[in-house]
Structures are given as C-alpha cells and as structure tokens.
Length: 245
Image (cartoon, rainbow, N blue to C red; front, side, top):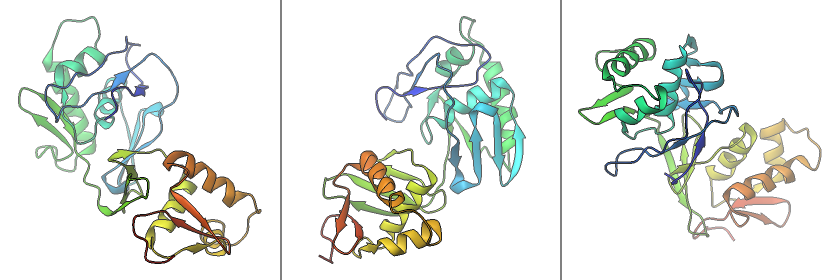
C-alpha cells in the first residue's frame, strides 16, 4: 500500500491523523485525517457486500444493514486494509482517541459487526481475528485475468466486483470507465471498434465526444500509453506482445 492515503470516516469524534505502523509485512498501513470529504462506496465479496461510509450503511446480498457510528468507524478502517491485518491497538487509538486502552469494547464492536454481516458469525469468515495482533477483513473476489501493459504495469481484472488493480493497487473508476476497460480487456489481442463500444456502453446512441472523453479519463488513470488508438476508429489495450498489429 502507499505510505500515505487520505481517508475519511464517520467516527464518534474527529480524531488526529494517525498512521498505522506495520509490525510485519502483513499488517496494514493507512492515514486518517480530519477531512469530511465523502468516502466512495466500497464493494467487497464479488459485489455481495457494499459499504457506504457516509451513510453508515452496508448492503449484503441486497439487504440493508444500518451501522452505529462506532461500528461504521471500525468497519471503515478494516475495509481500507482489505486482506491485511490491522493492529487492534491502532484501531482503538483511531476510534477512541485520548482514552485508556480497553480491548473489550473493540471485541464487542467486532462481535456486533459479525452478527450483522457474517452468515456464520461463529466462523468469522469475513472479519477474522489474528491472535495478539489485530483484525482482518477478508475479501474473496475472483481474479479473472492479469495482463502486462507495454509500460510494464500489471493490470488485474476481477470478474465479480468489476474491480481493477494496477500493480496490485486498486484504482478508482467510474461505472463507465470500468465498463470500457472490461470491453478492451476481454480480448486484448483484438482491437475494438468505436461502434462496438458505443453499442455496449450507450446502446448505440451518444454524441461523438463521449467516447473520446472516456478514453482520455482512463489514460489519465492508467497512463497515456495504456490505450492505443488505431486506424478506422479502433481501440486496444497496449499489452505486451499483442498478436494483432
């Protein structure tokens, strides 16, 4: 993970920014600040679980679950460090600043979260405990494919959630940006025509600038060399050793 990521939480109190210092390679590292900028929806478990931090709400398999402020703060920390162990002491310092350590309140919050979101709370399959270390939110999304761009960056596609990672770091994409990237990633060796893309994204009806703007935005996030524009109004991901020139 990057050394510094600004994140916003709905918390019982505004807290001083703190960095979660890892004690091993498997421990998460994030920075929380005092900003009130809304945090984007987090999608986990292949789309089965959606967390909206601004509203302290989780949808799991379509069922709406309301979280308390404390539950939302704890879950936000864990979802910022998916598949990484976050030290219990650091969660406590962030959620309950300027108070004496009290592991029982964190354990109680974790227990309430498990009852709300885990189909089998006793198995702790979604929120896992690491003995004497902390807690980990486990995401079991399905990796579809990985391609290497000409720039050397690795692009990973996840089938269920439509998540995309660049060099193992998730990038934030709009719905249309994600859809376009998946269209180009389906068959990286075959260029896709403008007409095909417009049909899939806009059912064949859009102005002539919409696709160009979408490609421009994706290039800004992936690198300008990531998407090739070919003759005849065709586009292709610039991957290593494409078979079609």
